Length: 175
Image (cartoon, rainbow, N blue to C red; front, side):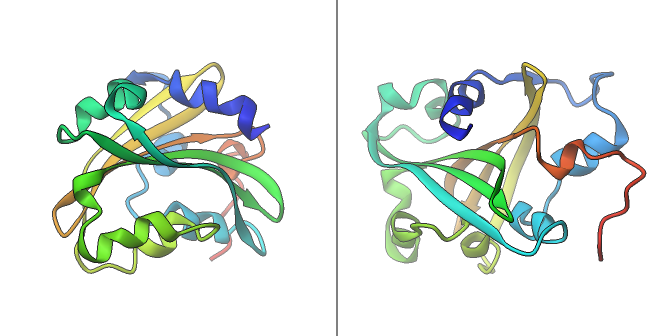
C-alpha cells in the first residue's frame, strides 16, 4: 500500500484551516503538536517503521517542497511507512536541507527504522513553524516545517485508510 500511496502523498491539495471539510475530530488529529508516533502508540501495541527510500536528492527532485526550505544544493530525503501492529497507518516524507545536517542533526541520516518522532520530540531545541492540512483523494494529510536548533526540515504525512484518524469520532483514545 505505502509505495502506491507515495504519489498520493506528493499530490496533496492543501486547504485553508477554515475549510468546511475540516471537522473538529479531523483537526484534533491533523493539528497534533506532539509526536504522531506517540499518538499512534495509544491505539496499538507497537509502532514500527518500514523504510521505503532514503538518500540525497537534488533541489529539482525535491520539487515545490524545497520552496518551503532554505535554498540548498542537496536535500536528505526519507520516505517511510508508519505501522500500528504491522498495519500501515501513515506514509511520510521528510525533506532535510543538507545545511541542516551539521552537528547533532547529522543523526537524521541514521534513523533507519526508528520513527522520526522518537528522535525529534526528545530534543529541547524542537520548534514548529506551521502545520498545513490537505487531502489527496479521500485521504487526509498534513505537512509541517520543524526546526532543530533553528535548522529546518519539512515533514509531510498522509494518513492511510486503516489509520485511527478515520475511526469513528465517538471512539475514545486509550489514555
